[in-house]
Length: 349
Image (cartoon, rainbow, N blue to C red; front, top):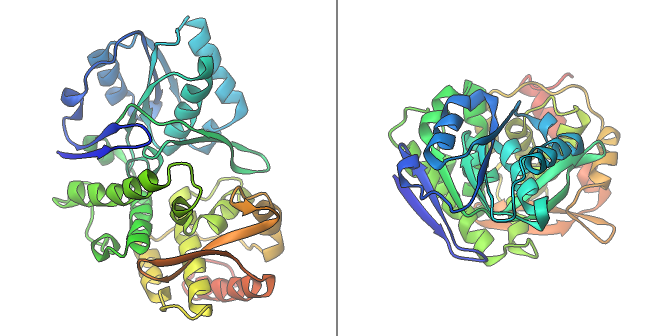
């Protein structure tokens, strides 16, 4: 069992391993369960162990992060008469923890919640750090709030239920944490499987990077922006494909683009490193997308400052910059990015 502690702005524990339920102290007051139906068995274990008679199961995926579903969950809590001292238990992947955290942030102006991430993506990234949110037709995560959980409990048994691509996707975020921190061990993903003996420690190491960054900058005023490495293009790709492209795959594509930007600005050539990640991931190929197809989504990216979009650029592992970039450079890098993907068979010529 791996144990980490977040100290600020709100202290809470993070447990990663098998048998985490035995380590969870039942919160006082009423409890409600929001869960992904794909992990209903584990969700019901959580409900029974912690005493949550109010239960709502949803189909996970980006389709759950909508204003309509958000309203349904609020109505579920209100119809159950859940008071302000109720605790919401959220079991599922990143989309469920995003939705559940935002529900907890806004129901009765805020109630506590516990996160039980059940995918590698939610363990490494979405379940930790207090970012919650919904999508709009105009773009991803344009609605949200910072609302920190009372605890994060990652039961690794649930990772064995994931399809191979879904398991690998979350490790793309861990790889990203390796680029941000300079931790070379996090860049070594090829041997990881749900049964890997080093998986537990690897995930904890990746989470520790995010914990350190978010403790120093919980509300994304500075350093936390580095965690968006690869995500500017990734979110545009997701929106342009109507979320047919999975998030982890989109981030891997975004990391390749970021590496090309870094090389163009005189940084270390990280392109071969990210190409290796893409070969291992074997993501779904992209449809034909011109730069102009992405511009509407980039224009609404939540990382804009004033009217300028800021890009996270890796110049070397552990050395990144956040800055606006000239349109000509962005277009040139996009052309190089398309050429790399065409050569790898991941985009139409």
